[in-house]
Image 1 (cartoon, rainbow, N blue to C red):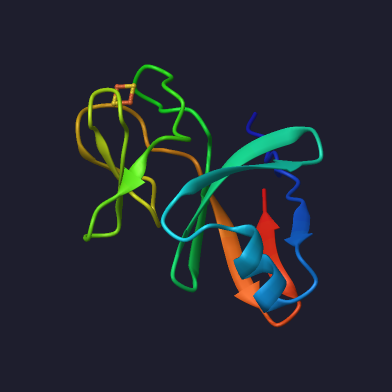
Image 2: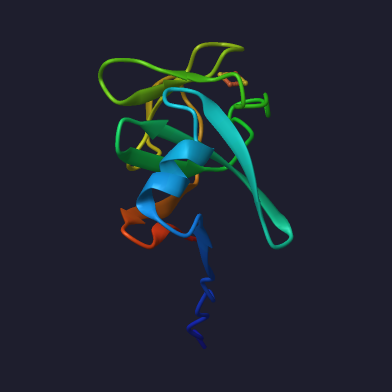
Length: 114
Ligand code: FES
């Protein structure tokens, strides 16, 4: 028998306005954000924001020192595996996908769904 298990998603809002959310996130640097009991990593590139798990799916290195390249990929500092920031798919290196979270920047702040 197969049962459908639905994951419950939670929404959080960072900042009270778009400008406030942008000011909380340094451009081009990964920042740790605590949402309830969960910590995630957030990276802002201009007015695009990406959310993802804070540890690399390869060997568990912290991604707080990871950095983006010009192709919209996140590079893990330990073994330089590259991950697509939107899909989480590894572009170089063999491991599972990086878990990513929806981040929508609007006039009321940054809405993150985990
Ligand atoms: S721990 Fe990230 S690439 Fe190896």
